[in-house]
Length: 607
Image 1 (cartoon, one colour):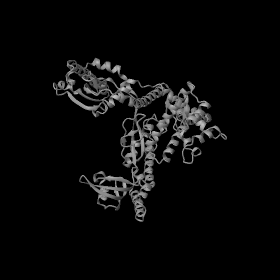
Image 2 (cartoon, rainbow, N blue to C red):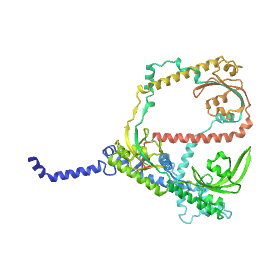
Image 3 (cartoon, rainbow, N blue to C red):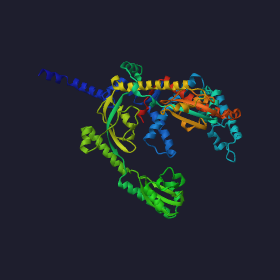
Image 4 (spheres, one colour):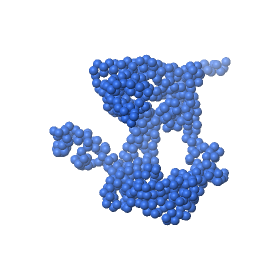
């Protein structure tokens, strides 16, 4: 009785305490926008509205999403069809552009590369931007850019009409100055220009002797436990396994219904009627065909043989007469109308020249709404009675993803589907069930089933893998020694062919009348190409490693170096090398800036 009386006396305190706990539960426990204790105490919650940061500069989520949507809108205006994959690609591009802009901006500020008013004027005077060259105000009567008219307007402004242009140049010119400054650090030495000329222009008679990896048996080597343990310790980072998560999922395919197929057939019959009423096939194809490869050409397919087309399409086209118009024909691509323009027989094979109109069978809104409703109902049941129970009671198949990382974007069975990894890494609770996601061709509901923490693979699990690696290294060392022995025994006049005759496992080849770059067999053999450049006639190279083989090369004859031809091509060769090296240097420089910067990347949470 005493306890009950105390409870009655303190009812107001209990009610207030209950209310406080309820509010705390909302703010800390996750009732408000999914927040939880982990987010609160790790600082993850404050990053929910942040796409990322670079050093001290933060990119808010809304700003980032607006930037992505702007680019998506431009793509749509240009006639591109947007899917999930494009959203993700644009998202990555926008994020990388932001990171680069911030880092380059810091360098511009550090080295005082901001643009003065005089620089802006001189730039506009000497290098009118293309958008100004195209402006009607600066065109002559023939529609060409009139520099004098442009200069007159530049030197005699009527108000602040040049202000937007000045602001644009002011924002972009510092980056151009920095780009020029960095790229001017690159130079191309004379020997590189000569080397490129030799590879592309000097013909040679040369031979190669390849000692394949299979020449040395793996059975001839032993690897001790001590060697394996030492290798593991020295290369432990190779065996770091990042955190991975696994999901179960149920998918609902978005596929056209018979009604959708019938609607497409009715649409193409309407087009057929218009053509039969006198409209040009080419004009209708340009306006309505959904074959992006031929639409702009009025549906022109050119000449084709029967086996180049889908069976039903080919049958209709090859049974039609010249000038005949047939269809609709149903293939796996959709419904086609076909107009045969010409036929011929070439090399004993009949060919047809035709145009076509394609209408693809798409899932209609009504069909998609039904699939979405089915997915939403399952999601509701999964949260009410459990994921597995809901799937079992409705007869839905549960599928399993492979282990996912935060960057996983392709899921077997679902295709391009980054939403899976985003969901997997957005929660810390196994058993969590996702919202209904839409992929390109399905609605998907996921359940987080396991979280595998980052770790190092245990030595016992990869012992045999390391053993194989060490055996491979020993085999390569042995193979190199065999190659060196062959090289040491060769006399100046010896042919590599004579060495090849001593062992059938050796691979001998001879190349005559080719340049180094023009020898297709050496397309990916840069190490051999570099050696051949240095060899004079009659010289044999020391063994060169190429993939898992060792190769000796010998030049029998080589064309003389043509100084006049070199001087004629020198400028172009230097320009080609300079472009390549500048791009490589600039990319490496940007990568180094990123490596040193404090970058927090959260942009994948949003797209």
